[in-house]
Image (tube, rainbow, N blue to C red):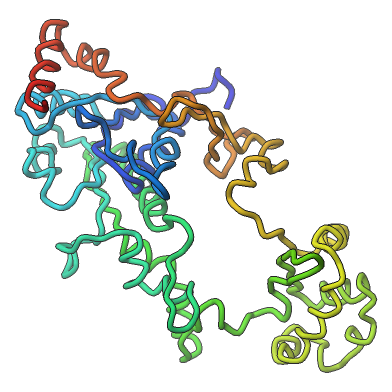
Length: 396
């Protein structure tokens, strides 16, 4: 947005006690929208900064547009500093295991007594109920919530290829915070918002639950399902390439047959409607695969794009850094990585006033804003030095 127009949540302060993906996603979204987000980290920094493998990109992805204050919450001095900071906040967000925040005196019931206008967002594995004592992970709830069953082949449940529940759980936490802010405008009172991995996962598979409700037949896993469309498949083509092609209406079928000279198939009464083609897939698809296999993926892409038919190259994530559409539309922005190098990161997938919401503050260094934030809540330089020395001494 234009620098002269403040972002919609400018003036809102968020203090987050979060790590990994779910909680940080909530803060990132609010920060992208203009809120001042303060990340409370241990003295040694959020462990997410040090993850390897699949977790090595978590911190720079989900912690932009935040400040960092490093506090030792195992010590009363650290908790006191956190309480002073919370006293300045509109929203507190956390995603630690149940009971952790209560032990610190930073749970909702404790904080609401200090400030009834406070909005408190808890990100958990389960909403309150029989499962809420369990330890949950994205993969755990995918397995128990039907998503892994739907993604994998029959007898081979498979988690989705990204942290869908963590990310969406953080999104719903942010949406809940936005709703609570609106409610506070009307009532003058804050409230607790709870978002959970399991319930998020159930929301994702609701379409399959409702398919059963509507038809009386269980949904088949995606690899073995009966597609709603006659052509909706990955095709192996020339030189071993692959491409996804779709023909999802009778109008598109006529265009497709004309474009590839499939006049006989286009005139076949057994293939005249989409439902006919769904029922004819056993013999129709081998014919189409053989006819299209002589073309390269680029040739098929050109024909499908020219005729406004759905298609997609099979792209690996690393190739998206060079995607011409993402780069032309401002969908990627420079971000500081954990080692200080620079990469690009995807921004939120919408525009506001015709513009993407960018990065106005890089993912913070450990405790980068500790001194400034402590001064703001009344600490003098000597007190700050003493607080830091106590934390270092006790942590060493």
